[in-house]
Length: 454
Ligand code: PFF
Image (cartoon, rainbow, N blue to C red; front, side, top):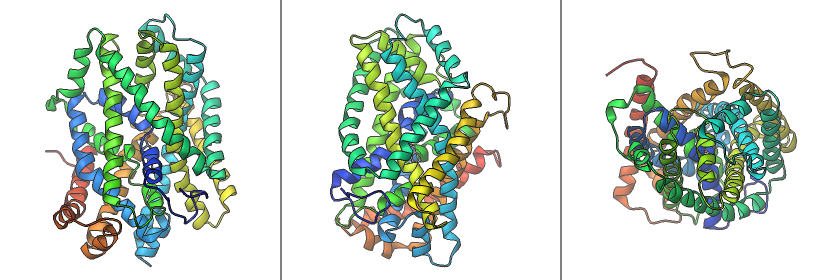
């Protein structure tokens, strides 16, 4: 793997390095915090199935598109469009990405801050002998405070900033390669505990037996938005990472592996959470607190729960970090290359601006919770606009760019590097990016926004 920072034009030297970086970006709070909570809000299995459909038909092809654009251009998201489509407005897709990155990291840092607090709560054994109701109010009281959650959010942002400045890619990814498998192992242990709880079956039914009558246009739009959010798509993150991938790498295989890993981890997190949700009588639709309320109940009910709990929240924070650095990098790349600000200053500026917006996200859980727009507080609003609007829009343009602007010959030439291109698979890919992805995004988008009904 490259010895330099993420901004260099070096290439990853190992296949594992590529996977660790891309999977490190993809696997994060989206899988473990957001996936279970929105699956709960939108009714369970039906939402999961729609989500899986979007992952396969839209997410995977767009991930491959982003990798392809990145490797071909060897540039960040803006530079990439500028280089591949000089003098055209395509570069505005990069602007959209910056806006999305800015919004996502603002609330992402807040949730990562909650995870830091839960490491401390685990170390001090604060969950011991608490009832599900007590654990619920423990969480609510914590996030509504104006002080501590902000301290943790800012600490997390400082860690993200430090990593992006120093560019300790070697460091963070070396650790990520060891730590992520441990996180998966812990989730597997939690799965076993959760599915052996009394009443677990109801939770598994909720997650795997779909009732499509429960689906709403808004739910379908959220499934689409989450497919983008979870795979880190639609804002140029994987264009940037793609630009560090060498020509010997098989891009299609890498995209498939990252997509499968990300999706499996989300499902495993769901399996750890929903049986417990039902076993402990927690409301599946209780929102952003779902994981933080449910898992402490599970930790209490298992041998070694004290240690598992510390390790779990520690690794969740690390998983959040390997994602947050990839989000910050999108903004920093823009500041550097478009506004010509040096890397260190660009990183400090971007972090400061995002952290300030993040403070308001945190306050919108308590002090400012009455200030809403369309019924959403500031935190939910940023989450909703970025995931459900900006990322799918970015994805729409990326698929149009690859499918219509670039065309088969150029795609084939790029994909043939490091791999043998199977003609019918290439045709499927092109069909998906040319018609299915943009068509489905447009329909879901307009329908979810209530522009038309069917
Ligand atoms: N994929 C990350 C997660 O699931 O937590 C979040 C994320 C990272 C979204 C990078 C977008 C992005 F560009």
